[in-house]
Length: 84
Image 1 (cartoon, rainbow, N blue to C red):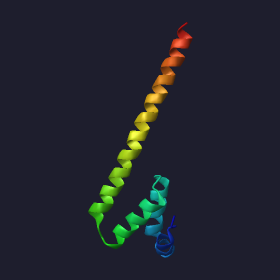
Image 2 (cartoon, rainbow, N blue to C red):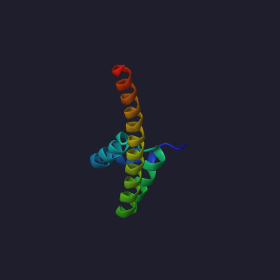
Image 3 (cartoon, rainbow, N blue to C red):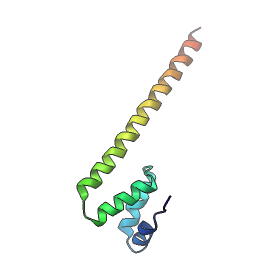
Image 4 (cartoon, rainbow, N blue to C red):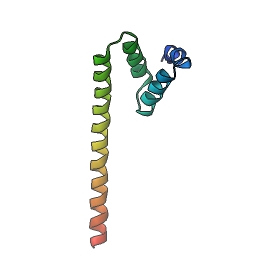
């Protein structure tokens, strides 16, 4: 897999770009997604950037809901065990 060499060069001289890059990493974006986001930024396609971020947000939210259901199952089991 190709690393973010382009993104790294751009962020070295631009603190805003560095902060965007770090935010994308912190949000769990893949290297591929980050490259795509930065390429869209270079082409000034904000609408596509928003769609990309919204898609990742939706994915994370779905994952969160699955994990919440698992926690609910465990909570119910603990409740049932304590109730005995």
